[in-house]
Image 1 (cartoon, helix red, strand yellow):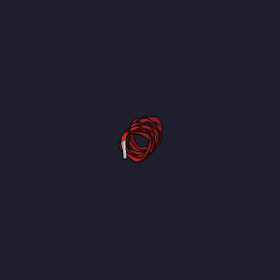
Image 2: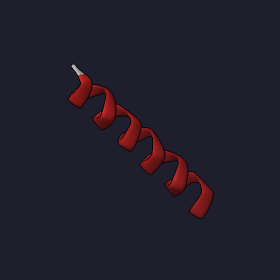
Image 3: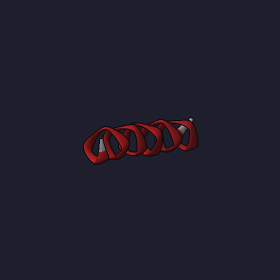
Image 4: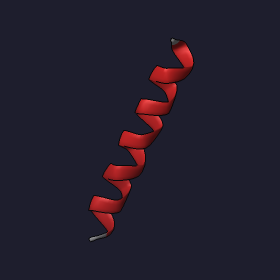
Length: 22
């Protein structure tokens, strides 16, 4: 369960970084 939460957090960070680069 904890692993999944971390994965989701990393995915959100990636999306935010991608939007910032845009």
